[in-house]
Length: 301
Image (cartoon, rainbow, N blue to C red; front, top):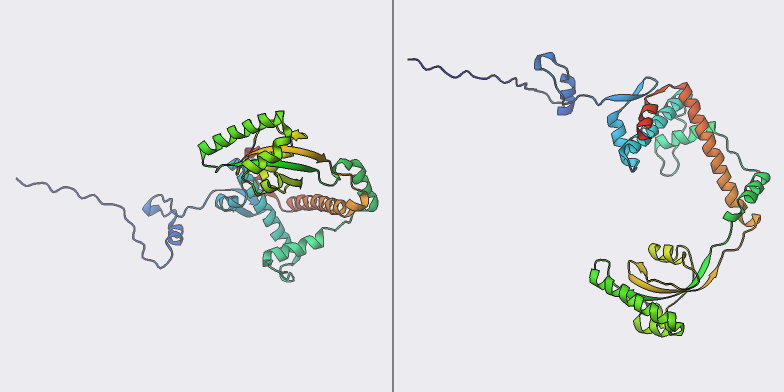
């Protein structure tokens, strides 16, 4: 009795004998009916267009690394918007023939130089008038004052961030010292010299007059919220816990228009330029039809 030989299964293997990179070869063979459907090399979907220029999802994905956001939808929308603006500017540069005359300055790339030349040509620099500066100053007086200052003493009870037991003990010791100092405030200098782990203990814990931003950020944020006198709780920082006394508070003094005119002028000039830029980009969007951006932005809303 003749044994039946098992039927050989023919696998549809395609051998590509080519010197091209695999991805390029796969793209060339995409859609080949003889070999069936393929996914390798399939172009990324494209939902965004500036005139007849497509901006693919792959382009957007690459750009997203430069636009961090809490939600991926927002990052995608920001990236898509940036790519649309870039394409709009490139089209206008080509239309006006500004690519060749643009000489890079400093570390500018050729692209950045072309965009700079375009914007210098199309957006007028407007220097705010004296009346503009005066009007803004009168409407925002509360913003213009010298920095607030506080005169501070402290006792640092040091403990490393990862030393849970040490930090618990430091906090407990701080609470004990605060209880004693509430009864006998004059002991602060003595306690600082005996208990503090900060070099300021040699001066009785004196840190002197401080402005915002002169100390460790987390310590800075807390002490500028305190009222004058001994803080009722230990203030935590990366260094440990601090017993803090705010000895004096000096609110910043109002600044005159002369002292802030240059700052106001720069701010108003930037605001005007931003508005002009937005208006100019809207003009370009009307000249070169943008499709798909509103839908992408809606998903991020």
